[in-house]
Length: 266
Image (tube, helix red, strand yellow):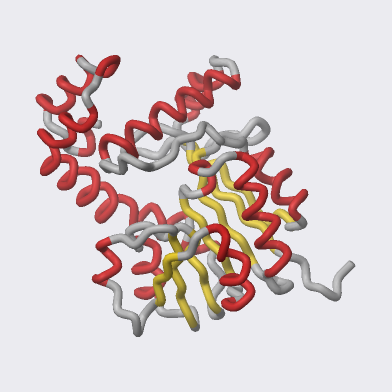
């Protein structure tokens, strides 16, 4: 956390009171610093090059791209700047103030609830769906519902790209093997708790998202491939990034890519 630029007073208050933290009071006292470091430095300066390296190469050139759970619109802006997709659509369940910075001529940003999700996808028919740090904020059953709905309504050849807080059981991390080894010393149940605690800190405190659900609904890379296959998708690529530097919390990161088979292929 010090690497991101948080000051010692903030970190000391947080760590000294972590067992009995008054969340609202803490955020009120440090709102300016939290916005400057987490929302400004991390999301506006560190996340874009991370997305450029690990997400943009997996998004097919041309065609329509749907950013599912687009949040502040970080990936949307990168896709617009890349300029090689015919249409860019962002979707979330709430509108972010940062959407005002994105021209409607460059991308369409939509608020869509789960009950309207299927009809929205049926109408839009994107060629690629990207979800960055979205699915682990859903309960397991909701993850399955969304993936099954996507498979049913997407056209053949469509691609789905997931960036998730996930480690792998069968492939080594690309970076920070020692952190992976430390994580694996815990039981699987405890690994989920550790990842959930980090996620809670990042979202509920540092990002000040006091309503963000953290249901501990994490899956390994292998489990994500299985749930995608059960929904009907064909896995294309999985990449266990590991534990990159310059992250707000040290959770494992992975990218999983799958496709919907062409309708005429059995």
